[in-house]
Image 1 (cartoon, rainbow, N blue to C red):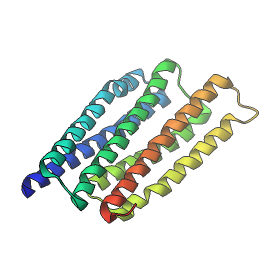
Image 2 (cartoon, one colour):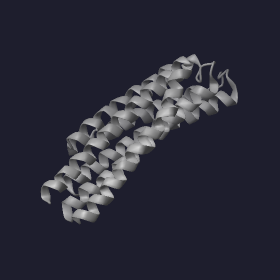
Image 3 (tube, rainbow, N blue to C red):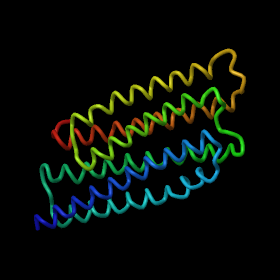
Image 4 (cartoon, one colour):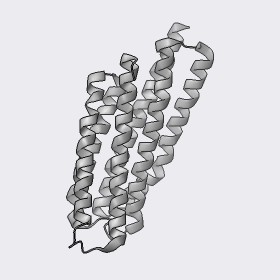
Length: 212
């Protein structure tokens, strides 16, 4: 029974890594769509979001089945419950990448953001991508110290979001309210993506240490 339980945990971890890789790729492609008005890239992200959701459904079923068959307690129970929380955050990260892609698609053939905002969004995307890369590695091999570093990455995203608003709220902003609203929402999507990565880091710290 113990070997079967360990096999279940390995499968759950594999599915989580698959999700993490998928949501990282989704935001990268959505950012390409956003900055280059690439409709095919945007549509690819939108079409593949259901695949991320399907993997999360597999995780939920596997965890429920494992709990029913193995009745884990203490640290074993912590591992399967943590997996559910991580999966939920990854699923939401996939949704946020889809939101970026939908904004790009809605504005096509025009770019969704003006040239003045592109460097800031590029910076936000680069930090978010680094965070997604880290959580993929941390899910495969949990490490509390590495997970704690995600908070610092999130601070960089917050700084870039503030820089974004500074540009859009300037007196000489020439693009009107609609473009500013799109910019604010897009900034929020990247910021929330990073927040969910931080949540995953906190779940992993709890997994390793048993402390909230």
